[in-house]
Length: 314
Image 1 (tube, rainbow, N blue to C red):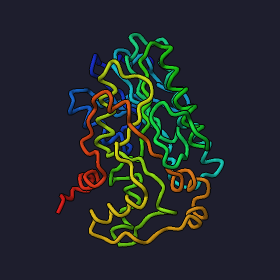
Image 2: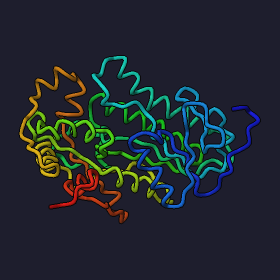
Image 3: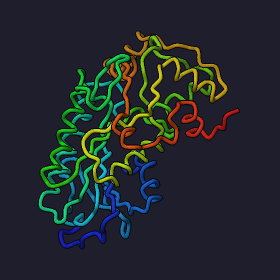
Image 4: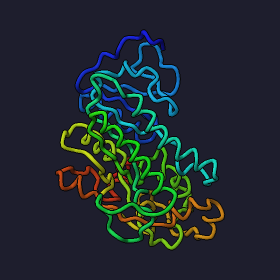
């Protein structure tokens, strides 16, 4: 990685992706390639010789920003896993810094790049809204309270700095991404397959979810549509309660799903994380995607779970 390295051979249709090996990135990369885009992975290690990779760091952004000149779009997905463990003060700093400081560093490293990417599409989250019960929340709803809401506000503000560099900025507020390789579904599957699954807390909390394929498709849509900018809720239209989710997953797996996990147990195990991620619901509505004509491959939970787990309906 020397300053004399040649620019990437790019052009319209080349999309640089951070977090390409993560849960959502693993679904996004093949969808971009299927749509005819070339994918340039932004990596935090030494790029492999001959690979479509460029180095970046959350502290410095792109290490050789001139090499991204001519790339059409950046999709920024990288960030610490918010559900990896109890939110200690150190963990909360890591979550915030990886998103806010990392995004700001990436954007600022693009200053002076000519031509700059047309699009900066940044991962965001329905955490913007905070725990809101059963209130329908579209993109016009104000930000809520809590740790995650504060992180997401600052995260979107950092991404918004790309507009000052002439880029179209999109904030993709993902719900719970359903994929058996990780995330909420990946964590629940071992318990449910043993017949030990069930709702958490009261079971009345609302889960706003999206199949990983549909999350990837919505992301590609945002990159490809020149009139897409600002926040988009990337959630299926049919949010469900915890009880409905457990019942449906049990039915798809052919296992009972009746063992509840009391709120007190979750709070003892996870502390603040339990109240924001597990016990506080959000009914998020993808109004802007639907109004723009975007269609979900799997708008209903049972179909999404069957597709994710490759289980046809009986």
